[in-house]
Length: 99
Image (cartoon, rainbow, N blue to C red; front, side):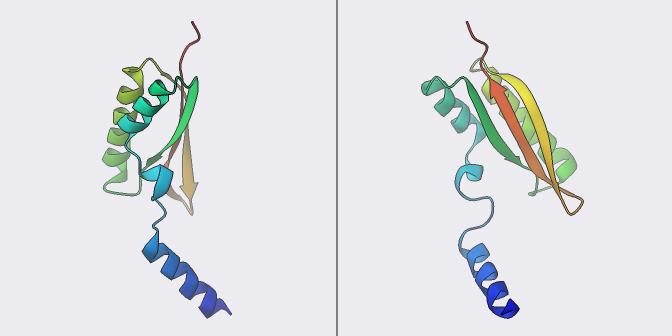
């Protein structure tokens, strides 16, 4: 039974990697979509699993912060997600101040 489950999980990972879908969007694209839809708050995933985590994650967060800041959003929360002691990424929430 475990071998079948493992085979199914491996096949699914090969077809649809974990970073696919919503998590694969460019932060600039997400920021523009949020601004176009006039959303008050947005939470997105910033992946830290590709490249060097110490520089890649910081650069990815900086790009996301810049994309949202240029559209009038402020950073509300940055929550790291750690699995088995490894940094996987961040859930970042942005909010547009009410006027």
